[in-house]
Length: 197
Image (cartoon, rainbow, N blue to C red; front, side, top):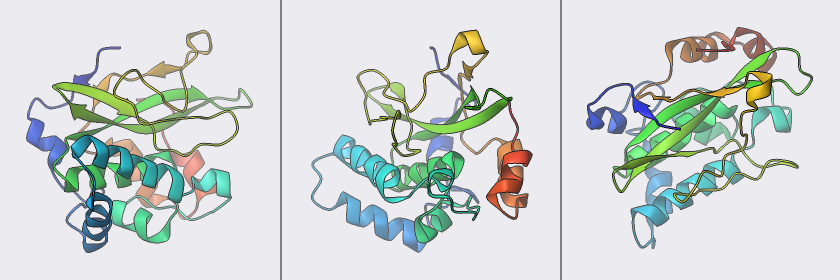
């Protein structure tokens, strides 16, 4: 799949905003810890990815009702859905000057009743974008950091009208961010999130 930048300005994928607040002290401290002793930016990116994937439980998997959306809050509270975890990973990567975009998939719910919008990131290495999914592994999900072929949590099933959206966003999609900011808990969030872009 060919990925397309929402904005041609690569510096936009390094910027801080209200959700990807990589200038926040907690983001900077964790980034510094992860950067300690790594050989290069690729090793740092893999370390940051594994940190978010493995140490911040996906709130649906853990049953945590709290909603987080700002990267620093995700890192402090150690919880979030896929979108929040993508914001946290983007912040950690941008903190070390690795261009990172947000991207989305439309996936069918396990029970087949409608669709969910899934959030992930893309990192730029060697002049190309590579999608990564830090949602967290569980039985049936084995996502890994990879620049040599995608190892995402989910591969859309075209027969079920699932899809990858090719656009790479510098900031969270406004409909996603609005739902995250306005939801008092994860149950309300599941009803508020858009099901497609």
